[in-house]
Length: 168
Image (cartoon, rainbow, N blue to C red; front, side):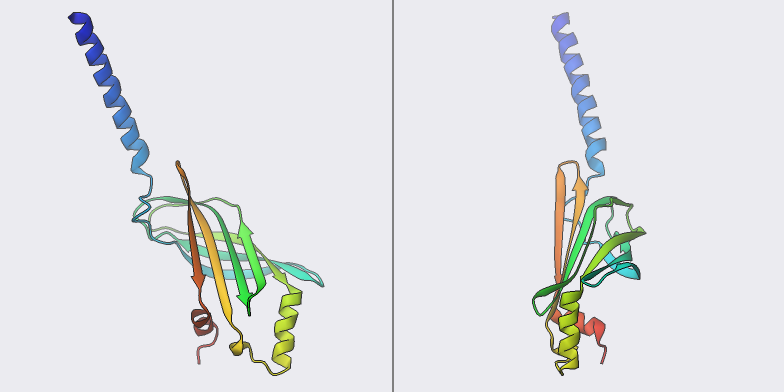
């Protein structure tokens, strides 16, 4: 009977330790249902390399975490389209740790396709106004969790882009 009591007590203690460790481990995992989207604001763009067919820039953004828990952004990518053609794209594999309600700088490598840009400039010269084009911006970022990445994709529509670019 003493052996059974000892086994019961050991299994009880082990269970309590496992539950305590699991609680500590899971407490910092963001709840996907309550996770708010991160907020991005461009701070600067610097030319790194300019060639005939394309250019590379470094874009620095402020990234704000509006959540009540810490998040880790594993990577970030975006694509900007004009009349359905990819005009600009950028990405970064750099990991970014953000505490709750924290803002940090984040740098992304940006590539511009001059062939696409040239078409837009020619259209403008030939009388097709830039406001007449249809734009879209697709952003994707990945929040890392111990159980895998959560993917967030946003598409900013034509109206919002034009509203930001042309305030008249």
